[in-house]
Every structure is written in structure tokens, then in C-alpha cells.
Length: 124
Image (cartoon, rainbow, N blue to C red; front, top):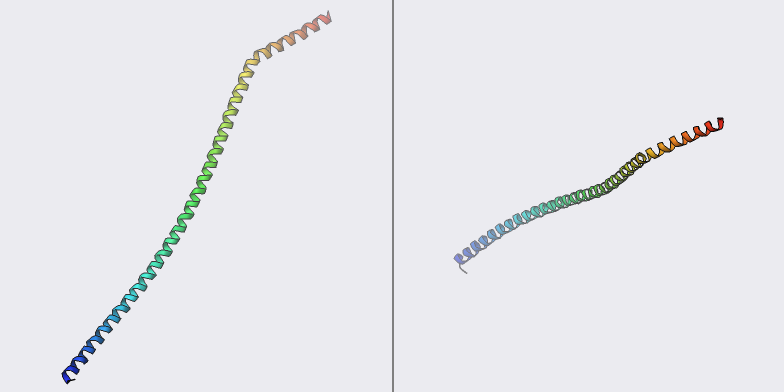
């Protein structure tokens, strides 16, 4: 091998070594970028999991409130029915009392007149 071939081989070795160093540096940079992106992905995953958990809790609370509202609506309907029935019964009772009042008054007058007549007859 001539000096010129040896010089070319050394230069080629130097170029290859420099290229390898550049590739190793680039590889290290990409590894660091990958690690950074993985950490970012883990953080995002944790944030999404926390947001999902919070969303599920809110949904559970909303479902519970909806059930409470349904129970309250049913209770309100029940109370409305009771109030309406009570009102109907009161109106019916008032109508019956109103309708019976003249009869009761007449009976009371007859009984009073009858007693007074009986007393008058005994005293004579």
C-alpha cells in the first residue's frame, strides 16, 4: 500500500468516525426527544384519567340528583292527589251539610215544638 492509499484510508476512517459520531449524537437527541414525548404522553394520560374520574363523579352526582328529583316529583304528585281528594271530600261534606241543614233545622223545630206541645198538654 502506497502512502497515498494509506492517507486515503486514514481520511476515509476519519470521515466514517465523524459520520458515526454525528449519527450517535443525532440518535441521543432522538432518544431524549422520545423520552420527553413519553413523559408528556404519561402526563396527558394522567390528566385524561383524572378528568374522566371527575366526569364520572359529576355524572354519578347528576344521576343521584335526577333520582331525587324523580322521587320528589312522585311525592309531589302523591301530595297533590291527597290534597285534591281532601278538597273533594271537604266539598262533598260541605254540600252534604248544606243539603242536610234544612232537614236538620226542620227536625229540630219539630222536636222543639213537639216537646213544648207535650209540656203544654201535661200542664193542662
